[in-house]
Image (cartoon, rainbow, N blue to C red):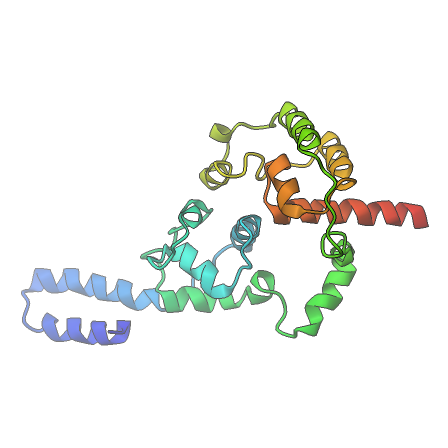
Length: 234
């Protein structure tokens, strides 16, 4: 049953109620009607934070997915998504239809431009490091277990700027599986990543050493290689 159909049903029932109950029902009907009128904006910063958190968990955000998180859809199967910023924040405030209409205004922010050729152009300008193919070329792995353990211990020795109990809930949840999730990269950690990349381009293996997602390690590795190449050219 759609919201308009439900409102029509309530209007029919209203005819058979006493005056105090009618007044209460009128307020409820108005709230239902307002849910489908997307007049209250969702802050762009909030959408960006949610999309960033989704990407950290290796999701590719879509308008539908963001809408499901913000209204706390029961169809969400991954328990990690229930700890994301904004989860269920707008449940009861907007209907699924209304929140989707609002988020369509942020579609380019969430999913990227509609033109499939545009993201590549934009990416090459704003994120040129993504063209680095270190992790997609022929695989190599000369990283011994002993060296991997040595690097792992050095990473652990770097510590964390903030413990999990000082972080927002969604970050703390992510750290249950990824101990260094959302931790800013330091010069020391980048140096260790460069050293590790001399032995392997296996993103999964590097991720296990650095306590981050494979996507996060690959991104930082690509940036490091790109910046190094840029300095050489200069």
